[in-house]
Amino acid sequence: MGVRLVQPTPSAYSYPLLIKNLIKPAQIYFPEREIIYRDQHRYTYREFAARVNRLANMLEGQGVKQGDVVAVMDWDSHRYLECFFGVPMLGAVLHTVNIRLSSEQLLYTINHAQDDVILVNAEFLPLLEAIKDELETVKKIIVLTDQSDQPESPQTSLDLAGDYDQLLQSALDEYEFPDFDENAMATLFYTTGTTGLPKGVNFSHRQLVLHTYGMLSALTSFPGFKVDVEDVYMPLTPMFHVHAWGIPYFSTMLGLKQVYPGRYDPEMILKLVTTEGVTFSHCVPTILHMLVSSQVINSLDLSKWKVVIGGSALPKGLCKAALKHKINVTTAYGMSETCPLLTAALLKPHMWEWSEEEQVTIRCRTGLPVPNVHLEVVDPMGTPMPHDGKNTGEVVVRCPWLTQSYLHDPEKSETLWQNGWLHTGDVGCIDTEGYLQITDRVKDVIKTGGEWISSLELEDIISQHEAVSEAAVIAVPDEKWGERPAAMVVLKPGYKDQVTEEDLMAFYQSFVDQGRLPKYGLPNRIDIVDSIPKTSVGKMNKKDIRKMYQ
Image 1 (tube, rainbow, N blue to C red):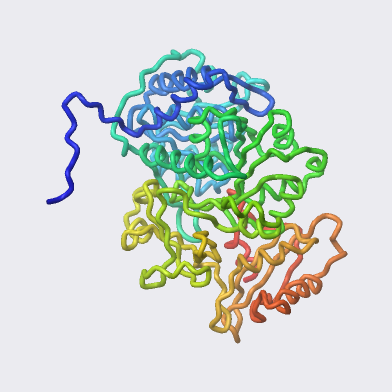
Image 2: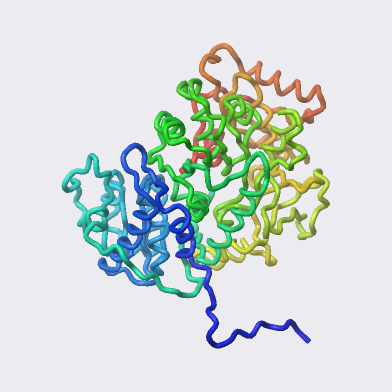
């Protein structure tokens, strides 16, 4: 006898997991709480819901139907948040466009996604003008402008269907959002790798709702880093990048006061943190580095600010710099294909009694799997490795919110989902406490003389030198050893001409002398540079760094 299925009565309502249901709690609990855009605009959740309704009516008036694709090109704003809800709630697909792509990549993603309508910030009109004659499916372009300095009609050669706010103002503020299949595509964006064309990553309503609840179970449970309804949220991860890690959905469902910073400017960000009382944010390490390096930060009280770091490993040196300013910082891990949350480096209750140095080690770990995430590290045959903190393998995962395929790319989709597990391409180990530690990307690990060296470990070590601001380590070809590590380092202001490559090599040597780094792990070369190449989402661009060393 198999499992016994529940037999619903004919009148029972099957409640679909749709994004429209995430917007409802705040309307009941905190309808007068505010959503803020820079120092330019603020309104309540009640007004936000009305504008989402207006957006749906406006898009229908522009000919948008269920299944159509609506692209957004904007800074992090209240308008973007409206699109996070209004577009998929209508039954259309929200394409969050990476505004930092090359014109060739931008054209490819718009045509590959088959965008029907583009909502574009006036600042990005030149990006579309450069490719307008090659757009294949776009029917309407609507411009987004900041009302305070809005020109009557932006100077452009594009045929615009109107201004976003003006069109919303003339639309009705009531809309009955329909029920439909919870597996309907809700969002789409493109991830760029080291080779090939960008890949379209898509998520359903069901996946985004379950991801929101997974985040809720992780971020509201552990002492010391707990998000609740009194927190004030400000994203510092672009909203085009994996839905700003899905946290706007989480924050809206809880009814948090939300602050959107627009273009990332250190002084504006820190001003908003203090004037609006921001207590919860997330960003990649380079954004945190930009903030702790700002002179403004020294005069601010940031003791209530919780910051989740993702996208790249959090170096211990940067973690200590944040803690010095009383920023409660911790790591989370995921990837574009995982919606993205998989793990969070939350300290278990007994760890809050540890020294700061011991806590830093945990805060910089990749983290504990959040509820409903089944995660393993496996050998090349797919066999799970022991959870002893030593044996490493590729990280593979199963959970309810993983993308099921790349858009229009069955071959890469099957590679991603080999043997029924999503393959992250990361190498790591799991310790006896259950914490995952990523030791490298499969493609970034350095093999020298038959031995493996982690580029992330070498970056973490040098980040602890008092003079080091940023660092990146890659493998460079070597005739004798196959590959050898090479480090690129940016010094903090005040240390230029005071610290040499030899000083930094001596710092590495001290870790060898202590037995914390094998001798073959010493870099062959260290280059002090003014800046390190970054990707469009602020990660170290190792593809470009490798080209420089070629």
